Image 1: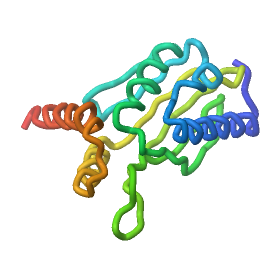
Image 2 (image 1 turned 45 degrees about the vertical axis):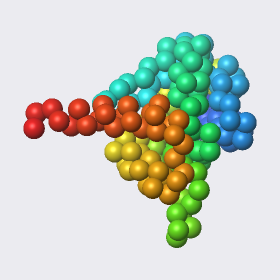
Image 3 (image 1 turned 90 degrees about the vertical axis):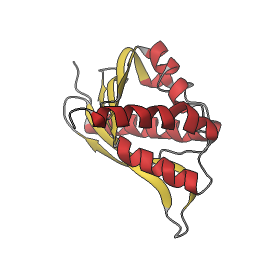
Image 4 (image 1 turned 30 degrees about the horizontal axis):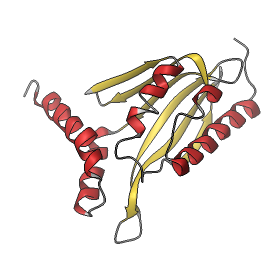
Length: 175
């Protein structure tokens, strides 16, 4: 594999960040997948061992990660980037936030951190991506949003309740 330069990796990371900002504004996440992801990309999201979503190729990425998973209640959420760390062998790590709607009484955001481990191919397209975040903190964030009247019922029904149920069942094992 051709090794991309530090500047090329940073430019590709910035392109991804710019697309994510536009997706937040559009509330549509699939429009840039063909541009950013290799046809045979493997995109994995770990949900604390409760569920692993693996998309094999851009059609599955559109159908799962940026289709189904970014819709149904996430409309007022943003995912601002906090940093990009360039490694070796076409790899970067991005640090981003799951930021819910509204602000707390003290003016701070309702948010939890996440990271992505991304590898680019020699054409500068993402060929693997692994997203990781702390599911327990995400559930607490959703509880806080619900108490503030900011959690959409659709998100609660389609994502929060199923995830909490799976997490509780997993944690009950071997007690």
